[in-house]
Amino acid sequence: MKFGIAFANTGPAVDPAGAVQFAQAAEANGIESLWTVEHVVVPVNYQSEYPYDKSGRMPGADDSPIPDPIVWLSYLAAATTTLKLATGVMILPQRNPVVFAKEVATLDYMSNGRVLLGVGVGWLREEFDAIGVPFNERGARTDDNVAAMRALWTQDEATYSSAFTQFENCIVRPRPVNGTIPIHVGGHSDAAARRAGRLGDGYFPAKGSHAELARSFEIVRSTARECGRDPEAIEFTAGGNGVFGPSALDELKALQDIGVSRVILPSFLFWGDSRTKFSKYHDEVISKVP
Image 1 (spheres, helix red, strand yellow):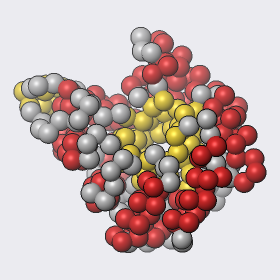
Image 2 (cartoon, rainbow, N blue to C red):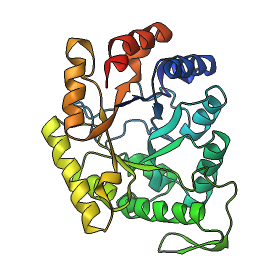
Image 3 (tube, rainbow, N blue to C red):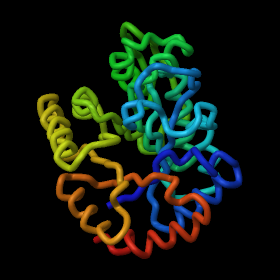
């Protein structure tokens, strides 16, 4: 089982020194990856419903800092050596795929292949309006952006044409270290699960009971088979809010039994004396997992 940290670019890790301290403490104590959250802007008094809290609002104040994930991860790449640099998630349809492919490939190259690209379609309509991207096109644009970026990463002289993106005989250098970059599809909906089955290297539903997760994972696998892909090659990640206390190992075993290979723990549980808290979690949980 791999262990990651969610919403890593918030709280004390917004501060440059705090971010380095947090990342190094995580790396030293068996944490595999840091996963960032993203919002370019948060429109005041937004009416869109946040799907991961009963209140319908994001946690924290609307003016809480959310550093850009690629810039923040680049900063920490220089302060770490093995920690995976993950986005959880980038709101991919808001990005220009040609420019973004170059940015992500550069980070992967400079970090010696440590990038995991988590992507999602987004939920905050008002943010899409501010950026100038049609909200109702976000699903189609996500699929298209993945295909365009993979073309740029893998083709010597990339050519791609769709309703959203066109380029011909274009070269992107540097390339990703391992030839491409793993794309993990985020989202708890059936549409997200099908997207992961069609084109994902991994799937990360941000919520769900064991039964709900198992159902979503089966949608991923069945979709992969329908598309001629190997369902066993798709990595499953799940939230790890319950992986604490005396029942932590039982919860990890239950998640493993439904196919989860990575749990993502909320960062706020390690705020404060992060080195001591990470060390304690390593000794009590991580070191005891087979």
